[in-house]
Every structure is written in C-alpha cells, then in structure tokens.
Amino acid sequence: MKILVCVKQVLDADGPVRIDASGKWIEEAPAARFRMNRFDEFALEEALRIREGFPGTRIDALSAGPARAAQTVRRALEMGADDGIHLFLDDERYRMPFEIASLIGAYASDRHYDLILAGVMAEDDMQGQVGPMVAEILEYPWATAVMSQKLHKTGDGPDASGTIYVERELEGGLREAFELTLPALLTIQSGINRPRYPALSHVLRARSQALITIPASRPGETDPVSFPAPRERIQSLEEPAPMKTGVILSGNPSEKAEKLRQILQERAFL
Amino acid sequence: MNNEIIVVAELSDNRILPVTYELIAFARALAAGDSAPVRMIVPGRETHAVARDLADETGLDTIALVGDPLAFYNAETWMTAMAARLAVRKPRYICIAHTSRGCDFAPGLAVRLGASCITAVEGFSRQDGAARFVRKIFNGKIKMDVTPERDTTVLTVLPGAFKVEQKSPRAHLAGSMEVLKIPDHPQKIRTLGVIPAEEQDLDLALADVIVSAGRGIGAEENLELIRRLAGLFSKSAMGCSRTVCDLGWLGYKHQIGLTGKTVAPKLYIACGISGAVQHIAGMRGSKMVVAVNKDPRAAIFQIADIGIVEDLMTFIPLVMDA
Ligand SMILES: Cc1cc2nc3c(=O)[nH]c(=O)nc-3n(C[C@H](O)[C@H](O)[C@H](O)COP(=O)(O)OP(=O)(O)OC[C@H]3O[C@@H](n4cnc5c(N)ncnc54)[C@H](O)[C@@H]3O)c2cc1C
Image (cartoon, rainbow over all chains, first blue to last red; front, side):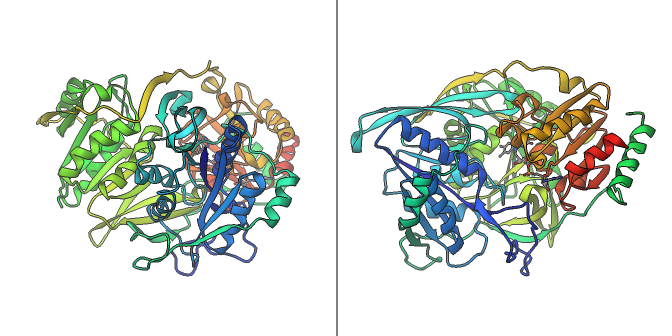
C-alpha cells in the first residue's frame, strides 16, 4: 500500500510575525524559526501507525515550498517516512491553496496512492483548503477533521481494494462516521494521536537519504509539475488595531498584579 | 455572469441552525451595494416545509434541494448535488457556514465549479466597488484582505463573526419556493451516522468565572498554578485551549472553542492563550475578559477588557500574593 502525507513548513508564530515590504506576506526575519505545521505532524503520525498495522506500506512525505522547506521534508523522514519529496518553488512568495493543491494533484495523479493524508489546516494561513482540493482534483472521496480511522484493505498491488472507516469531528463534541472507498484522502484533526519524536536510527538514516526534488514550474512553462493561475489575490495584510475597548495594565509586575486584584475586587469577583 | 448570491442553509435534524441567519445577514450586506438577489439553498432529504418557512420568514427565494441521497450529510453527495445546480446558475458568491461540515465540502465545491475560494471570512469592505474579504492568519495576529479573481466565489463565513440584525420582522412578501430533486446516489462515501458526544459535565456552563489555560503554560505541572488561581473565586471552573487537550494536559471536556464548549461566564481569564478564531468562537460572549500573555501582539488582547503583558509564571503568583 502507498500513502502520501502532505506536510507544510510554517513560520513559528511564537517569534515575531511582521508584514514584509510588499505588504502582502510575512517577513522572513533572520531569526525566524520554521517548522512543520503541527496539524501535519498528526497526519504523519497517523500514517506511521497505519504502516505498523499493515507492514509493507510505503509512506511518501511531500512538501511544496521554497528551498528551506527541504528541512521539513527531512523532518518527516526523521519521524519515519520512507521517502521525502520536495516540490521546489523557486521563490518565497505565498501561494494560494488552489495553486498548491494543483501542484500536489499533478504530482500524485499517476502515482496511485491508496491514501493521502494532510493536516486539517495550516497554522500560518489557516485556510484548510488544500486537502479537500487535492481530493477533488484527483477525484478521490475525502473526509476532513478526522479524529479516528480504521483501514480495511483487501489484496495488494494494482488490484488492491478496500475501504476506510472514519469519524470526523462536528461541533459540540459530536462526531459523524463514514466509510470511504479507497483511494481516499483524509485531513487529520489535532488530538487524534500523540506525534512521536524522531528515533535516533531514523534521524541517522534521514541524514544520508537524498530527497526527491521536483521543480514546480511557473504558468506557461513546462516543468514536470504545472502551476495554475491564482484564483484569489491578497490585497493587503495589516496588524489588527491593538485593542478596541480594553486597557493594557502598566507598571512593574507587582503593580499590575495589585491593579488586577483591585479591579476584580471592585467588580465583586473577589 | 450574474450577481446572484447563494446562501447554503445548514440544518440539523431538519431544523435550520442559527448560523444560517448569520449567513443571510452577511449575504444581504454583501448584496446591498449592487442590489444583488439573494437566494437560499436548503439541502436535505425532505426540506420542502423548512424551505417554505424560510421563504415566508425571510422573503428570500428558496430552493429545496431534496432526495434520498441527501438524508445524511457527506461531502460527496452535498457537493455533487450542489455543483450541478450551481454550475448552471453561475452565482457571484456562494456563502457557506465555516462549520465542520461547511469546511468539509466548500473547497471541493470551489474546485468543481472552477471558483475562487475564501475561508473563515469575518467581514468585508468595499474598494472601488469590489468586495474585499477579511480573514485572519497566524492565530489572529494578522488580518488579511483578499479579493477573488474568478466570476464565482465560494465563501465560508465564520460563525459569530457576522451579527444577525435585530430579529427582523417577518417579510411582507414571502419568497418563492422551488423544489429540485436529485437522483444521484453517492458512489464513494457511505454515511454511517452521527455519534453522540461523551458525557458532559456542567461545571463550565454553571461557572461565574472561568480560568483558562493555553499552551503558554508550558508544561502540565504548571496547571497547578492555574488551578490555584481559579481557587480564588467562588463558582469557578477550569477551561483550556484545544492545544492543551491535544497535549494530554487536560481532558477534552475542558476545551473551549468552535469544536469545544461555548461559554459566557461573568469573567474569563485567558492564561497563555494566543486567541485563535477557533478559540474566541467559544468565549466571545464572556462579560469580562482578562488576558495574560507575554506577547503584546497576541490576538487575545484584541478582545480583552484587561490585558496583562507578562510571563504568567511570574505574574500569577504575584496575583495570588497581592
Ligand atoms: C477545525 C479546527 C477547530 C478548532 N477548534 C478549537 C477549539 O474549539 N478551541 C481551541 O482553543 N482551539 C481550536 N482549534 C485550534 C486553534 O486553531 C489554535 O491552534 C489553538 O487555539 C491554539 O491554542 P493556544 O492558544 O493554547 O496555543 P498557541 O497558539 O501556541 O498560543 C500560546 C500562547 O501562549 C503565549 N505564551 C507562551 N509562553 C507564555 C508565558 N510564559 N507566559 C504568558 N504567555 C505565554 C504565547 O505568546 C502564545 O500567544 C481548532 C483548529 C481547527 C483547525
């Protein structure tokens, strides 16, 4: 069986997040830290667990991104993916979900993955679109926000068939269950598992393993994977106004603590 | 192209969910500029009566999209049923709720229709006659204005972001109601049904004060600090962000937000929570919000009444001793 896991590299938002000179995306400060999107870690972990249940399964991890995204592909190898694929974008411009989904779709179209997994959304742009878009491009059935899955596979190779039982998350603690015919795509919700830390043996293997790097073309060019025209455009980014109605307490930490207690007492909470 | 705006109703047990009225309010505001017609689609096995009521109540023309395959939600049937009708209508905008199900089928629908797709929309502005849609990125730290490039655009609208006008009076003129029956059966997805939520406890619902922990508490041990802070108040309870549950620090029954509990206590104290829209969706109704976060630009401060920019590990002990 073949599984593809889509992993995105995102800027860690614990550090500063500043708008770049173009006003259309985020600056890459020298100190910026990039890492794997956490939701994708859950997706990759789920793939690793499926492989444990179905020995012989191969897991490809793929990231579409600029040169630095190779680190995230390598991280996926360290966690245990068999092969790492880097759809190489030759600049750091932000791409809309449909552009990325088209690239991934073009890559995956003749590679017969039985299952494609992705995170429920990316922590940076928070769109949640790439997964279901890839599924629709490939004409795979899909389910998003999956909180539990069970694979039923019969046979292997080209004649393989099977289904996957999934529970996806609704509001208010409800779930709904489906059975999808393979091949299928799932986007994985956080909390489905606890992503593992890389084992030393995998870290060592990943160090020497070459990534499969595929250049992604610009519109009109004929590289192996093709790019569509964007369907949406970012007009501007802006930092929201600091505070609408509230106040930020000033002073040293003890003064602030004192003020807070006063306010809470005035309002009869204490 | 026409300038029609389609609103896709969301139902549960054949009843219209409140978020649908927010979508209608959003669509009407969006239409106002160019007096575009707003039309509803109500999908389900037998939504004739619900669609009729909705047309009477709102005055909007309504399409009941009915058929056995629509008895239960799944992405494939929803999308296939809608894409066929929408491809011929070529509306300008299709408004879908940014709920679990809305997020499930909207992006695929956009691909099928060759449409633009903008998710988690919180509002819009107009510039030179064109609508720019507002959404947030990086857990609310940055606001993004997006414009569509295609003739049709699928929008998912964040619940709670667009207020429903005062319970509008019943429309003078009822809208028309049309029934479209879909014959197609799903091919690749079989719906097995909804699984009820695990036993709920009422602590959060009954609490006057909720003290909530985010990933910023750093480690499970530090929950003790949050617990002690909660102990200062009578009728208090502990809440948390989803991340804290995912890390296994607290059970999911403590989770507040879009996919957790919706709460409206008299006082909500957010400790080390960034303020992602999915979290805010669950505590927006709190009467007073206090936020403690070491990042002055954390989005939680945008909705806080009292903001404290400090490391919670040093600050909370000071509050206890003050
Ligand atoms: C479909 C879907 C549904 C979701 N539903 C929910 C939901 O119901 N509820 C929910 O909460 N989330 C939900 N999320 C997740 C949400 O998007 C965020 O990822 C999550 O809310 C972030 O949690 P957090 O604020 O604890 O962590 P982070 O975003 O990592 O924020 C941590 C914060 O702590 C601060 N901090 C760090 N150290 C300190 C310190 N020492 N002192 C003070 N401050 C500190 C940081 O500045 C930061 O602002 C959902 C996501 C998806 C995709």
